[in-house]
Image (cartoon, rainbow, N blue to C red; front, side, top):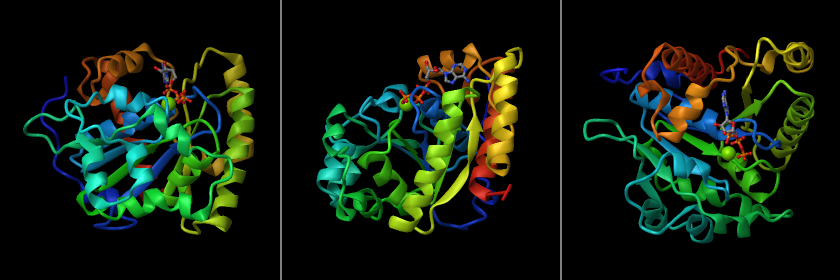
Length: 280
Ligand SMILES: Nc1ncnc2c1ncn2[C@@H]1O[C@H](COP(=O)(O)OP(=O)(O)OP(=O)(O)O)[C@@H](O)[C@H]1O
Ligand SMILES: [Mg+2]
């Protein structure tokens, strides 16, 4: 078990010192590990004492379940997209179950199945600005905002990207994931032109790698050729430890054992790269 939380490290925030960074965790393919990566990065931020907000944009609401909040006022991201006023936004945000009495809290803007009503295929620009607008009333309270996205490019993902500074793409080393990364990079290009010139590609995280799988080795080579610079190091291997920590609503940095410690260090390194844009 990892003991005391280290002091906040302002070096994490070198691109926008003192300002919040909003990072969307996305993939246009389902089940590749977006929620798992969101939780791993949130755990790294938590361990470093960064004031962190996780926003659950996915109607499946998996990240809300994993962060199992103790208190909810009945407001959610759906309420926020319906009414962006500060009082609603503040009530949709609650402390996560990770947060103990002496911790710098990780907060969650709760997800809801009803948010799918906002996931239209042809959103207006006004619709897409809503999360950005809503964040204005609370973002000064945070160093980092992580948005867990649904696996599609409808309005919810576009709304998340409009509010974001950077997008992390999650991919498995498989054929359909390679094509999904390509589609996601094209979609990012389109969003830069349409809505948000500041939006950067914060990197591709390869997840669920199995070193003993020749197909994975082949796809890794292919992804290296196609997306080279975008691929972040380290890559995350498939391990039951991550599933267990998620299932127990526990940050990986507080899960016992060497495997959990190694994964924690990997998420630490990924978070630094994502926030400092170190590879590009
Ligand atoms: N590195 C890993 N090792 C082992 N299991 C993993 C790993 N990453 C993700 N998983 C498992 O894979 C499943 C899908 O992961 P996750 O829910 O994070 O994907 P997702 O992209 O968020 O899915 P969705 O598109 O449905 O939102 C989960 O059961 C999760 O525990
Ligand atoms: Mg998910």
